[in-house]
Every structure is written in structure tokens, then in C-alpha cells.
Image (cartoon, rainbow, N blue to C red):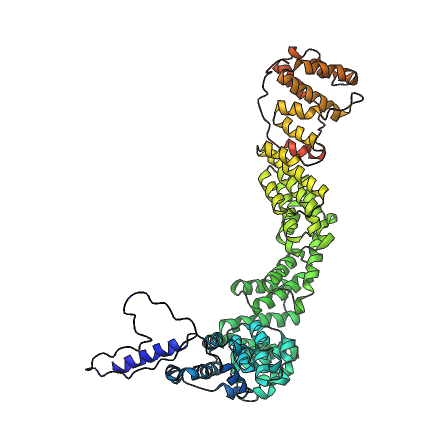
Length: 620
């Protein structure tokens, strides 16, 4: 019982000393079972009453300079060895000025024992109490080693890349290990000469495997076999690399035997790696058909995801599908490789090839059915070429979708182009096209969203005006007529569009007022001119403005003489009070199909009709 209490107190005190700004706490000897309970030290005792504020975190400056003066870590012997009990006992009892040194010794022993997480935690506490430690090479080396053990390889290489560690053999050994784990074989092999003095001593197996892996992936199988020579012949990790090296040496039968041995004794990861390596060997030796190889690769990827093994499997899958001309399959595996692992190093040439395949697949001359073309582009839109080539690709497909009446699909396609790929200048006209397509699809809400998300005050005035016109149409379709008209108030030449919106919504009074200013000259009238005059006449008739209709007849009777619409004009204007609701309905049906709204006519026509037509109200 006494021993148990002593151990608990020791652990508690040591834990407190590992907190930033901690002060070492001495542990009193345990009392005998018959003695009265011993009071806890003041630093650990519970407060008597009332809330107590935590003391401000204090730093322990000065150790950075001490550490910089200590011998530099050059080999594995510098990490030291210390039992956890001894380390915690020392940390719990050491005076405050020596606390950082005790922590440092403990962190070094944890690195030597390959306990990266614990080492990193102690090192983080140390630098919080003395930020200057981050400038000391020995500290950076220990931190880089801990990060390597944690698998944070990019951070590890960054920590190990200070000028003071450039030719440090121990730093080179840890950089070699981190780079090999990142499958950066060329860079890892560049560390071998520098790291060799640190690797001559007995090191944990991962260092040897890292050097051998870099040699295999760097195309140096003889060097790999040299590194692996001291390792036991039955070691599955070593046999996996021996098999891969033997493949590169052209010893396929020996390699397959190595892989079979790994399949019997290795971990799941090692067995999967061996299985993939054998597929790679058989493909290289042309002893397996493409279809069989692809089936085996698909089965392997079904059960294994997310690391270098899947990356190699995807790379081989892409090569096989590309070799047999399977564009869809090559796009699928290439896209998975890009999205999961990036296309760098030996894979850097795949992205241009994927873009070329997508462009070729969507070429109009291939006559690919529209549903397949749209699906192919949407699935691999992140592979589309950039710049003008990519714009042309998406624009052609959007035009096909629009021609087929698939307006929302076309809008979604261009919406992705608008917000993900288009440059600033292209967004102005493209946003108007996207919004127009959404309006044609009956989705004015999405049209407004696209316009507002792409708003940019730097657009030219003409471009802003075109966007405002489309926005006004969208607003009118959701019943916000006054807002639509307000948007158009500052757009030059928008009176016909304002009148068209009012006509569509049967707002006769405001339409009559607005259209009066845009009536054409009383001479040869084209289809649009006839429509403007007749619509104005209908609005006046709806309002019962007999005098205005008489004046309209006097002004345009000659211009309508001989036109197919002359009877309608005569009926509306020569005897305005004789036209009943049925006659007005027939007049509206006889109007020319030409719209004064021009290229926006189709958008306005998508708005729901407003019915019924009201009767005449008053005589003026």
C-alpha cells in the first residue's frame, strides 16, 4: 500500500513537471500504514475555499544557450538510454533550473527507443517554455526525428533542413528515412553518402529498410541488395524489397519465390505489397493478359486503399488501360491517381495525357451520344484543359445540352466553369449566360444566385448592363416586378425590356405609360414595330382610353394599310368601345410573334402567364 501511494505521487509530480511553465515538485516520503495521513505539498493541495486563478504560465529561459554549447548529436549513441521510471523520478525531483535538461535527456531517450509521440510531446513542452530552442540544431534534429517517427515526413524534412544540419550524419540518416517514407527516392539517395557514418553503427531496422527502399525505387537494385544483406533471410519486410530488387535485376523466378514467402509470413500490408509486386512482375514479363491483370488489380484495390500500394496499383492500371485504348478506363484510373495522390515525379506526364484523352473523347467528330458526353465531362471536369481550350470544350457541350432542351444541365456545367476555372474577365459574359440558362430551365432563383456570387464592380459598364438585364428578367419571374424595374432604371436603352416585363404581367397602366415613349415612327412597320403599336393599343383598350386610341388610329392607320395585321389595328382603334373581351383576346392571339425584347424574348417567355385578362375599366 505504501509503495503504491509513493508511485502514484511520483507520477503525479512528474506529470506536473511536464506541463509548460511547470515547477518541479518534491515528493515527501510515504507515511507508514499506522501514521497519520501526510498532507500534500502546497502546489498540489486543494484550495481551501473559493475559486483560485491558475498561475500565469512562466517560461524557463536559458536552456537554449546551454543546449547549443553541448556536443552535437552525430550518431545513434547520442540519444542515450533511460528507463521510464528513472526519467520520471528525475523529472519529479530535479530543481527548476535543471528541469529543461531533465526533459531533454528524457526526450532523447524516447527518440532512441523510437517512441515518437512521447518524444514530440516532451519537445513541444520544452519549446513552449523556451522558444529559443527552435533555433538550436540539436533540438531541431530531435524534433525532426520525432516527426519522422510520427509519419509527418514533410514536417520532419523541414525541421531537419537547417544549414547547421546539412552535413550532420545523424540528420542525414533521419532525412533519408523521412524521404524514403515519402517515396522520394532520388532525394533520399542523395542523403546516403552523408548518412553513412551514422548508419555504420547498429540501427533500428527501419533505417536499413529506408535505404533499401530508396535504392529499389531509384532503380539501383544492386545497392538495395547490399543494404539488405545483413538482414535475416526470413524477414518478410526485407524479402519484399529483395523480391522487388530481383525483379529489376531480371531474376523473375527468384523474385516470385520471395513474394510467396512474404505471403506466408508477412503482415497484411506486406502481403498486399507482395501480391502487387508479383502482378507488376508478370506484366513486365508479358506472362499475364491485360484483362486478367486488370481484374487482379481491381480486386487488390477493393481491399486496400490510401497509401503507396494503391498508388502503384492505380499507376499500373492506368498504363494497361492506356495501352489497350480504353479512354474511359484510363480517365477513371488517372483521375483517381490525380485526386488521391497528385501527379508528380514519374506521374507528371499523366495529367497532360488525361486532358488530351478527355478532349478527344468529347470531340464533335466522334459523335458521342449527348448523355455519355455530358456524363464524361461532369465526372472528369477537373481534368479539363485550362484557358481557351477548356472554355471551348465546355461551351460546345453546353450548346449541345441547350439545343436538346437540357437547360439546367447546361447551366450547371457552365456554373462550374464560372466559379472554378474561368478567369476574372471571362466571368462577366459567362455569368450572364449561366443565369440565362437557369431562367430557361425555370430556375430564376439559381439565376439570381449565380449573378450575385459572380458580381464584380470592375466589370465594364456594358457588361454590367447585360447582367442587369438578365437579373431583371429573373426578378420578374419570381414576381418582384418593382425590383426588376428598379434594376433597369440605370441601364441605357432598357425601356423596351421594362415594357416587355410589364406586358407579360398584364400591368396595363404602367405598360401603356412605358410603351408610349418607345412607339416607332408612323411609316413602314416591321414585325417588331407592329407588335409594339398593337400591344399599346390593347393596353389602352383594356384601360378604356378611347381618346388615346383615336389618336393612335390617326397616327398609324396609313402605316398599317395593306399589312396582315391591319384588321386587328382597325378593330382596336377605329371602334374602341365596340371591342369586347372576346375581341381583345382574339387581338392578342393575332399579335406578331416578334418581340421588342430582342435576344431576351425567350427568357421572358419562360415566365408563367398572368391570367385572366381584365375587362375595360374606364372611358377617357
